[in-house]
Amino acid sequence: MELYLDTANVPEVERLAAIYPIAGVTTNPSIVAAGGHSVWDVLPRLQTVIGKEKRLFAQVLSRETAGMVNEARSLHEVVPGIIVKIPVTPAGLAAIGRLTALGIPTLGTAVYSAGQGLLAALAGAEYVAPYVNRVDAQGGDGIQMVRDLQRLLELHAPHSKVLAASFKTPRQALDCLLAGCAAITLPLDVLQQFLAAPAVDAAVAKFEQDWSQAFGQLTL
Ligand code: E4P
Picture 1 (cartoon, rainbow, N blue to C red):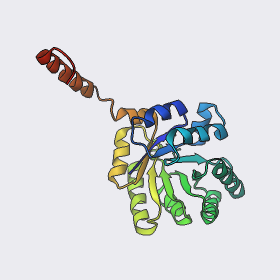
Picture 2: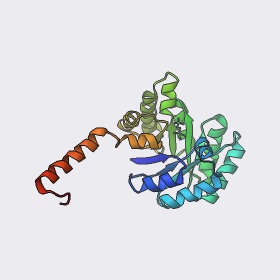
Picture 3: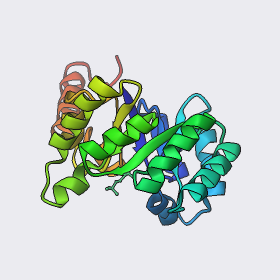
C-alpha cells in the first residue's frame, strides 16, 4: 500500500519522512495557501525533501478544461513526474482524458460518490480520491462510498487506484484500507494519532523501570 502525507509544510515533511514509511506527499490549493508560499516555490522543495523516487501530487485551480490542461503541463514541467489532481467536474473529466493522452498522470479529486470516481477512472485517472470525512460530515457514509468505488474499479477500471482522502480519525483510514484501497493520504494530526496512545508511553516507561531496578542502569 501507499501512505501519503497530506500537507505542504516542508520542514514537517522532512522531519516525518525520516520516521514514517511514506510513499510521497499530496497537496491541494487550501493546503498550499495555508503555508503562504507559492506553489512554484513549495513543490520543488517538497520533491527535494522526499526524494525523486517518492510521488508528489498538486492540484490545478482553473475551472475550464483548457486551463486545467495548461496548468497541469506547467506543473509537470516544473516537477517532472508530478501527479496532477483534477476535480472531477465535467470540465475536469475532459481534462483527465486529454492529460492521459499526453502522458501526464492524474488523480481525480473532490470525489463525493462512487459513480463520480468511476468516471474519473474510466477517463484515465491513475488515482481517484474519495473524500471520506467530508461525505460523513454531510450525513453520508464515506466508508460505504469507498467500498463501492473500490469494487467498481476492481471490476471495471483496474488500472486506477483508490487514494482515499479527507480523514479526521485513524479508524476512517483503516476502514478504507480494509476495503482494499491501495493508498491513503493523512493530515499530520491523524498520522500522529496512530502512535499517540498514552498506554504505549506507559509500557515503555515500565520496561525502563523494571530494567533499572534489576541492573541499576538503562543500557543493554
Ligand atoms: C485530498 O485529495 C484532499 O485534498 C484532502 O485530503 C481533503 O481533506 P480535508 O477534507 O480534510 O480538507
